[in-house]
Length: 137
Length: 138
Picture 1 (cartoon, one colour):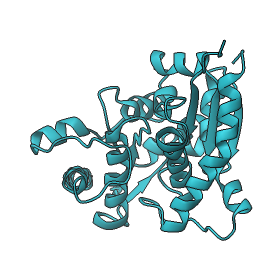
Picture 2 (cartoon, chains in turn red, yellow):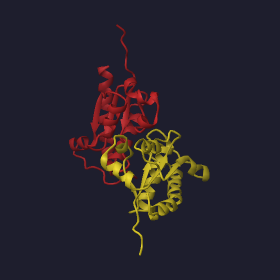
Picture 3 (cartoon, one colour):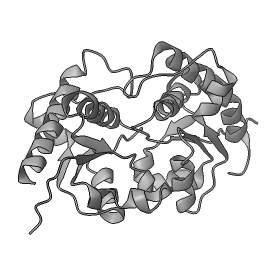
Picture 4 (tube, one colour):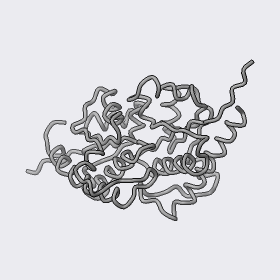
């Protein structure tokens, strides 16, 4: 049997423009991609599942994929499952904030020190999920 | 009698991997929060991707400006996938082409030049928002 080692995990962020948690989602995902797990993670813009071609739509079958959503509408999870493939893990920001006793952000942009703990907590949760997916192989 | 202003939906591309995606997003926030608050309105593009009924209703009932960060045109195409057409479809890079002194950089956060470019872009789009808000039909 061939043992295929998984070296990269896909992250799909909802990045919803209309809610503060969408901005939080985008920033936390970028933190993981750029700082916490660079080289182990890749991403795709969610709407590319609709606007892109075959290569974009096979994203979740090429990479074990973690979705990160800013609200209970679960756009990233639903769009990925509907248009690309099965999820490895799904993270919901309100649940992470509740678990960490952090207030949700109140503004859509210009995040600063006040929002930093929320970004850090969500990024940490995503990084943990990446490690688990890589360990599970 | 004054005509009632319509809402104008602003739909940036949700790009997470490109500077011009960040510029599209920031331009939309400038329009909605500073330049034309109360008229320019946001919804989440991913809601349209999953065909959310409330988000769909907003783009069916109101004129839409799409702002895309790359040539893949996700915002415009996501709208078209629902059978709707953008009243105005913009590409964020065009704002830089018109203002070469403001080079945007950064993915998570735009640099100062990028933030200034978003302000300029939103002011330029304001004229289109005003026209769409006062036109009778969608």
